[in-house]
Amino acid sequence: MDKTTQPYSSAGMLRDDALAEKTIIVTGGGTGLGRAMSTYFLKLGANVVITSRKLDVLQKTASEMEQETGGKVLAVACDVRNYDEVEAVLAKTLEKFGSVEGLLNNAAGNFISPTERLSANAFGTIIDIVLKGSANCTLALGKHWIAQKQPGTILNIITTYAFTGSGYVVPSACAKGGVLAMTRSLAAEWGKYGIRTNAIAPGPFPTKGAWERLLPGDLAEKFDFKNRVPLKRVGEHQELANLAAFLMSDFSGYINGEAITIDGGEWMQGAGQFNGLEAIPAEMWDMLEQLTRGTKGS
Image (cartoon, rainbow, N blue to C red):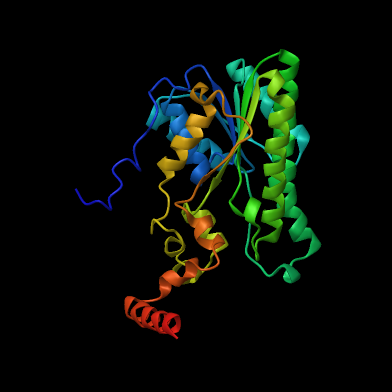
């Protein structure tokens, strides 16, 4: 077999009942990576509640996911920026399934722009969706679990630039950085209630809709992200779903307050001052080696 192939990248990792008898709320669960993770949760025996602002898209997705997996999906329209709507999702979840055991904060918004070109409203919109939205959902579920004396699991989707920073996506970096701080803070504070809080920082996992909005036109081809990844490929959706399912399952019961990166080494590639030297061709290295030897001998 070709050593460069990835035989397990598109295969499910956990046993079929790994999430049995669990109900998981997934914000932004109707499309892209949210849908991929939700689908795998269903295959592992969970009930799933998917939310976004577009009910028609959600309902169509819910029907397709149920047909594919045989699981149960509840679609609820929700703008996570509004706490009352988040509480309504919780109420409908309890009415439908009787309990809720997990929350996946996946809803997000982002766009690329020089920061000085942004209006205060544009900046605030991203903060509200990503940070305030995650906080609203976390607070609603946390209050419920604590009142019910019930353990729970919170999983937040962040980015590697939550801890490195990044130009041209500053509102997102600020918001995701806040979510990372919330993850670690609540892991310490709510651990005594049996509530685990972790995060995943994905690298490039292309989704058609999101990436077309983020990199319109021919930008996606000009900025081919796999060239930034040491493994020279982008992530498979199932690879992210495998990690999310593990962290949502009881198999990860002693993992709390962690932010796990799954990016093929991308952020480390960008962190080293000289990592960009991989662009130097072999012939130039030969020349540089001779120059170095000449300097040593002088």
